[in-house]
Length: 393
Length: 137
Image 1 (spheres, rainbow over the protein chains, first blue to last red):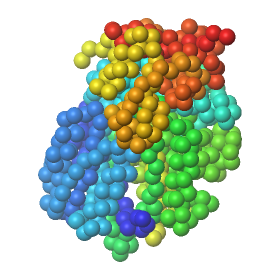
Image 2 (image 1 turned 90 degrees about the vertical axis):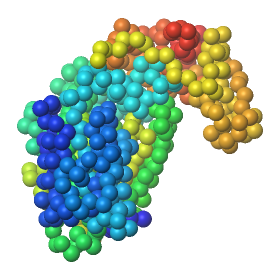
Image 3 (image 1 turned 90 degrees about the horizontal axis):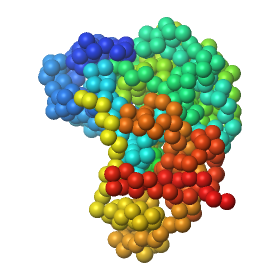
Image 4 (image 1 turned 120 degrees about the vertical axis):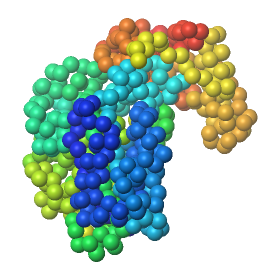
């Protein structure tokens, strides 16, 4: 059990955009330096670096895996560095590594960072990568699925089972984009928030997914500085304390995934995370869900007990999860609002969790933000990780 | 890098070759564990339930029900563009296992949850992919 062992004390992030003129290292410099400055530490206080291994970007993945970052940034006190990937659950695992290093005394302060540049990956390579990633090459890929189709299979099942209407599903985009519209780090910052009618009129990609319900690929990066909870407390600076961590594995291939087991996995991990943190769902100030596709949000709202059974879609349609609603939810707008940065949307979600608990979220700041529920999920949904983060320990 | 327009064939494992050999004869073979009696799909080297290597094959009836589906109209890989619209589905076989497949010989708007379907094999470069079509009543 991990309650109260680590805290995030510094964050750095660059706006998500498609900008091939910005290199991986441009972004790494900006995010890591900003995070260290935000933490109040000196660069040489950083004793460990944990990177999310960027998918489909072989050169930077190799450079990070083989230890270039501490040298490039002149982190003279660094004792070790590593990179790791578990799809969308990568950042949760990077934070676990940081926790291991901090709690065993290997490092007093650790940078956890992510960078992705989709715009420099040739289009053909991008299409091929996302068609194969998380899809079995023998039992699934020959039938022509895509990520959109995998999500369509799940969404269609739950629309049929739970009776969600297309309007309810489309309203999730409106909700997520209402947050993104106010997030300077979003690709859709300041852009029109589409109405339900506009989402439904955007053309069908694959049933029940409309064009506006799919993700825009973007470039981005962010970094966090992690120290022990005791050190964070002693520093008397704004911090986000990790209070719990619960996870369930579902399946590696899409077809082997039992949707009802996924639902139960969300319920159980949420229950365990809340119990471990010693709070109830009524104490949660923000449900910062990373689900990648809008279609999953109404189900998740029910699985987490935020909406009663059968009411998840209605809650979104009523605007309860939108900016100004009574249930703060995915305040960067998840991947559909932020722009999809591969394994990096979960990193951006954690930065947002810390930002909210530190009181630095500007227009999107959740009032009296004390506890944040944060989940991540990897691949096409092979697992779910639930955690609670708190303003204080 | 040019767009890859070659349609994919299954990337097999030594222990799954029997399955694909069966499809050439119009048979849908399902692996069974002789020790714990588990019905196994997709095929494994060892039984995922008891780790026995004492595995066998039985021909399935080819009958199934549509568990869920999604019909693609756009945004698929270039290699599949010529097949649009097409319906990808999960089907539950009578033998109790689930497969990803295509629903064919049926208008997309006529595909239904729980619909009875039966296997029909479609050839692609020497492989016979198990697709499913509406079952004869």
